[in-house]
Length: 171
Image (cartoon, rainbow, N blue to C red; front, side, top):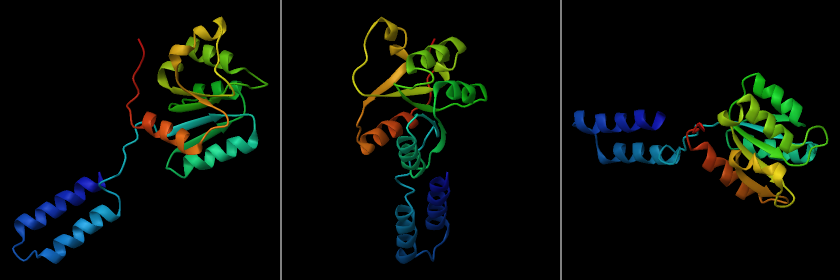
């Protein structure tokens, strides 16, 4: 909204002020571009929950996301993820496939049963491509699979792509 105000202010000055010279106009345009108003991204999904049992990986993901303006909640297992969802969390969930407390498959199935999968976007971190009958029910609810070790820029690009889209409810 800041860029709209600034653009309106610039147009208003040009139109109504006969003493508005080229230097002043250049100042506003430079200010407009310098502060990123032209390239400011709109995020519809600003909240991220990281479900990762390895503290170093969780901390690294948290810092990566927070440094790009996201609000991050970090939990170390699927049960705590479900508790956060019951408290009202809504956003992007980055879920490690292997978790000693509650497996990713069971966490996502419980999210589907409780209606949380429709309110969130799920990214799964995995060592290899997952397959088997136990995964058939959860495939439609997973937006992206990211294979470990992953490139931080690639993951961030996926997160931003998701965040820029309004959440679409499944029917």
